[in-house]
Amino acid sequence: MTSAELKCLDRERAATLESLCETIVPGSSRVGPVVYIDAILAAAPEAVRDGALHAVDALAPHAGGGAEALAPLAATPEFQMVRALAIEAFYSDFVAPGAPGPGAYEEIDFRFPLASRIDKDWSYLGVGA
Image (cartoon, rainbow, N blue to C red; front, side):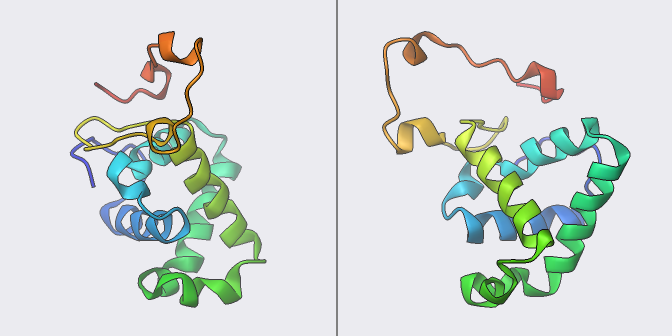
């Protein structure tokens, strides 16, 4: 995990979420998806935030078991919530401060003329550079 300060996740949930993200989107831990998800949840309505935290807690007992442990839970709302967050965190091309990267766009070779001119600004998340 990166050194970025988290806003709503405690250390235990953050570690669980990092493990879940890495299992769901292999290789994503190098961009610090927990920092992105934490910032999104901090700004989310309370009901959404509580639902996401409940989803992380529900999956926690299976977090260290890899894809095989999560497979039976794939159709649950809790898994779907965490999956959506993990995918958004990685494929938005976010790279947390202090994370080694590279981001998703580079990995999947997502390049087109206009995108190469974009200087991503994540300040709306309240995540420092």
